[in-house]
Image (cartoon, rainbow, N blue to C red; front, side, top):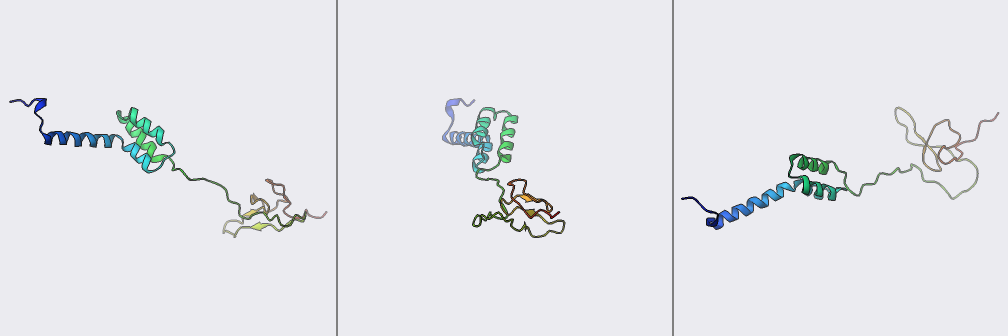
Length: 137
């Protein structure tokens, strides 16, 4: 006797619902990964996964994008080594501040703006601050 569609028992219906739910979770793994990593392009990854995830290329592409996308909240900024000293506004040049010496070279920074300058520079190329007195002629 052949089983008809109307003769599914409650166990078979539960198995089918579980299998369907598992398939949905597997289908949206790239979106789940993107959400868990709080990626910047979560919405774009989700839409790619939703509309093109049925193809293997779309699913793998959205998964790779979710894994490679940078996280939110990171800001890259340059922190100056020395803060400017605005307490004395005299035109006299201040001493050149240097970072701790490394075995290969010594880094020199402008005491006014904190940008790197050459050890022989008289003025900072970034802010124009006098680094030392010009040599006497």
